[in-house]
Structures are given as C-alpha cells and as structure tokens.
Image (tube, rainbow, N blue to C red; front, side):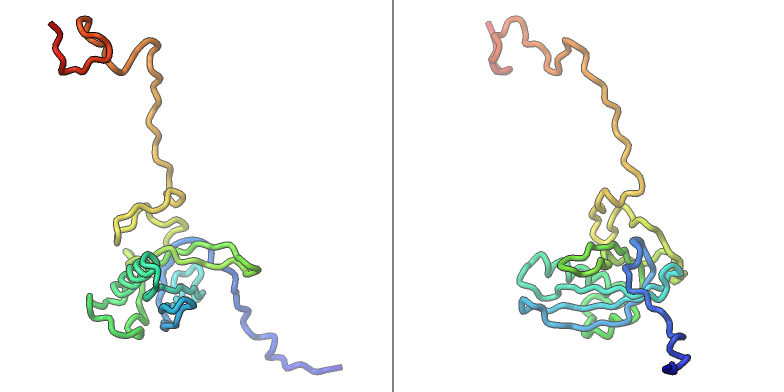
Length: 196
C-alpha cells in the first residue's frame, strides 16, 4: 500500500474547453511580440474574462503587426488601434507592449473547429469599448449588428432578428413594365427619332 499526500486532491480543476460563444467583458493581462513563421511579427495577447459568466477564464489572440500580406497586416493594425483606445492611449503614444496591459472592454468570442487533430478553440471576432463601464456583467450571446469602429455591418448570421422581407406582389397577367411604343413609331426605333 502507498500513501498519498491529501493536498493533491485539493487542487482546483482548470477548464480548458472553449469559452461559450458570446460577448464578454475582459482585461488584457499578457502581451508579447513574437516572430511569425513567415518572417513578420505577431502581437500575442492573453485576456481574462471579467464577466460573471466565464469569470477568470482565459482567451488568446494574435495580431499580424508586420506581415508580407498587406490585408493581414491591415487587419492586425486595426485591431491594435482598438486595443490602444481601450487602454486609454492617445494616437501616436503607443511605444511598448506593457502599455496595453490592463486594457478593458468587450470581446466577442466564437468557437473554431479544431484542425489537424487539435481541439476546438476560441477565436476573437472583435474588441469594443464597454457601454456598461466595469459592471462585470455578461453582455450577450450575440454580437451587435454593426461595427462602430469601422462602420461595417456584422455578418448576417449574428443579427438578432432577420430583416423583414418585402411582400412579393406578382405582376398582373398581360401587364408590362415598359409602356407600348407609340402607334406612329416602328418598333425598335430610338425615342428621340421623330416620325413625320
């Protein structure tokens, strides 16, 4: 028979499953710059959920801040701009990664299917300023319809209600949308041609 230390069973069980999809309040608690596989630079972020639902759970993000793909770099830098705003840093004043520590706001998380044998994981859709302040409340399971930073509409899959459809009115039989030609003009003649 072997004896075990009784404190072994008292360790907290950590949950590494993805955080449920939704919008949460968060704080950034770790930031570092790492080289990318393609020779660029990635800004790696660790955020902590502060909303009661999911409180203390961690999520991760990485931004392409230097990349040979111009679109990937633009997206990364736009996201970095939003994080700079959340950290209360004025334009042109962000000089090191530590300035982003403590940035607070809202984050929208989705769940990506695992690839190449990896487990499903969270994906950050966007960061925003909290309209509730630091209330610590879970906000919503659906992100807002529009993106206030870039004024671009969100994907329709996230809209809280489908847009109303216009009623379809079938045309009456025999009706045409083009008026018939004048009786004194041959068919196909331009409208500016005058007949004698």
